[in-house]
Amino acid sequence: MHPVDFYSTFTKNCSDHFTEEEIRNIRAFYYAMCAETDSMLGEVIAVLRDTGLLNRTVILFTSDHGDLAMEHRQFYKMSMFEGSSHVPLLIMGPGVKSGFEISLPVSLVDIYPSVLDLASVPQPGGLSGHSLIPLVSEVSVHSAEPHPGWVLSEYHGCNANASTYMLRIAEWKYITYADGLTVPPQLFNLSKDESELRNVASHFPDVCQDLDKQLRRILDYPSVSQSVHRYNKQQFLEWKKGLGDSYTQVIANLRWHIDWQKDAKSYDRDIEEWLLGLD
Image 1 (spheres, one colour):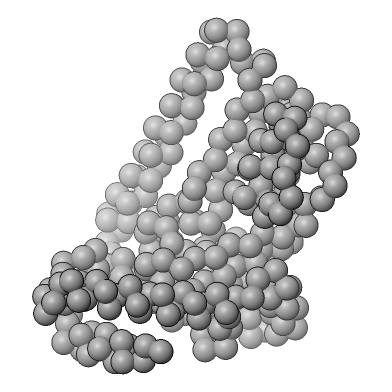
Image 2 (image 1 turned 60 degrees about the vertical axis):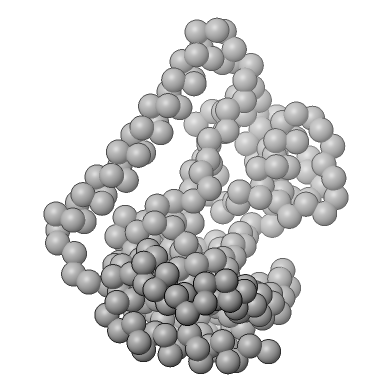
């Protein structure tokens, strides 16, 4: 496994063997949540229809993240794999094309400028996102800044042992970590590998190089990673001071306690070595 994927699997207590029944149960819970959400959305639409407001109301449905259901030996979120990062974005209402699907990758940061467009509110400068209304409008709408065709995502939280960056463009998903050098990148061709089971970074070094250059033009990600790394250590030290000698017992009872207890002393030493490197 890729080292970051392995770490995520480990901290989510997914490194041991799972029976087929356990995996079915995990996925049944996921599908049940989808069904419940679908039902609640149906209630909203039913009320709008009953009150005569449906044809003059814009409805936008999306989600902040997906939920892995044992794909790539993970559950929960905190991953750039499709199960976590690929979320629904549906828009219906006056002036919006019906039954129209955009193949272009878009992002949640595109929602804010899109809502401003729908409300005919002028957009302020410097927004990260781009309005999607020119792409879905029934009439021709001019946009001063058309959508660039790529999506950037970054993650610096728990369940990943390195800052993570994803650039999604056309059929490619490029994922790089930390400073771009110390952790190997991942490259998936989603048109041929929807399940993201084949990391083809070593087979397409030129594609990786081009996508990395584009990513660095968008974001100086090595500098961001360095800042996050320094911040995390400083915050951990403050947390450790408050707990005193009991901090390792607290860690042992967090979400990853099962795997932690397999070799707690070794992990204690790893933490102390990590803290010694604080600059």
